[in-house]
Image (cartoon, rainbow over all chains, first blue to last red; front, side, top):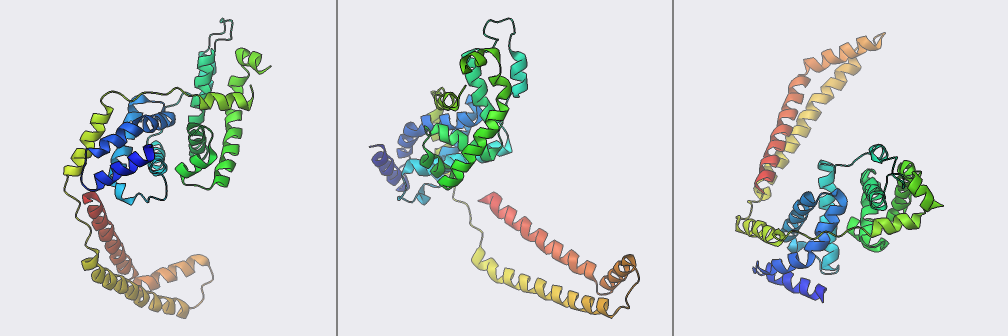
Length: 189
Length: 123
């Protein structure tokens, strides 16, 4: 349904009907903003990046080869843009050491609530080198669908799997101080 | 904590809703883009003969400059130390005007880069 709508809207835009692009924006604004948000954890910046992605998609609409789904093409374009944007201006991240210092030791749960812990784990992904960060972000964004993540990143599935494996190893090492906190130890056991 | 937990945490991330003005903002940018006249493409067809001639000239100048240089270096008597050899090579390069050749090459490259940048900025 959405694929047909995308194709119809693209055809209309290419024939000069600019208003048809609004349909594309309405359908894909959520996924594109959320994907950007996972890369930068900043709502304002995520919207700016998503807007730029839509603008680039508009400019390059004629280059969409219909063999691939419009969504695949759009995600690949947006991913390339987000990755290069983050290489230009990296996302602001709190070092994991700071997180362990911030906890309140008097708290019964060790000072790190579940919500905080989840946030720490999610943000830890952003501190990884880009070659591991990008595959991990895309892999979880696409609900652990390897082929969808590989298509968005424009890389072979085997390469993606290798990077995911290595990225997870690095992430495990980075998360070691957080995983040894009292509250988390309890859950680990 | 096992990897399954980390997988779950990383998959179940909070979804954010784009702000209410997002679509309008994107459409304004798209309309502005559509209203802008298309960029003037770099005139490759016109520039190509000139570029080829310039390239050939550079290659010829390079060959013309380097061949006598190598001949002179080869003709020089062998020096006892590396420093002396370097100094004599430098002297030989000076005599055939290698500095001017490199300056000309550098200026040609700089002007090419500058014109490419101008063309890129317009497009």
